Length: 113
Ligand code: AMP
Image (cartoon, rainbow, N blue to C red; front, side, top):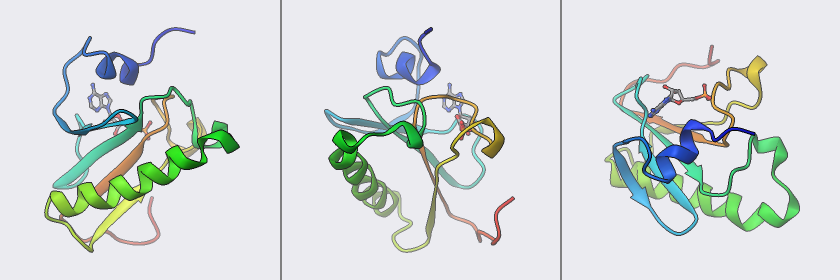
């Protein structure tokens, strides 16, 4: 399978505005932001979709959730932000490397589109 865009960002083959990185994950600003805060948090492990995560990924998924809150706080959106994971093309997923959208900085209506 060919390398996804996000693997290229992890490997610094294409540029991104990185806001956080550790051994297991990377967070960068979305190129087409849908809110004042719109960053993508991805595991470095190339899991295509959240439904492809396995039991062995449990700690990694937990790590991502905790980091998402930390990053939202760090970006100044402490208790008013939304986490979105699109799973599959039918749900709007366009890049097949698991990512959490972290959105904030404007009123977020419900239900989402
Ligand atoms: P999804 O539709 O859930 O798969 O989300 C993919 C996201 O990746 C979209 O919000 C895009 O705007 C974003 N995106 C695509 N290419 C890049 C890029 N080179 N740098 C940052 N974000 C990107």
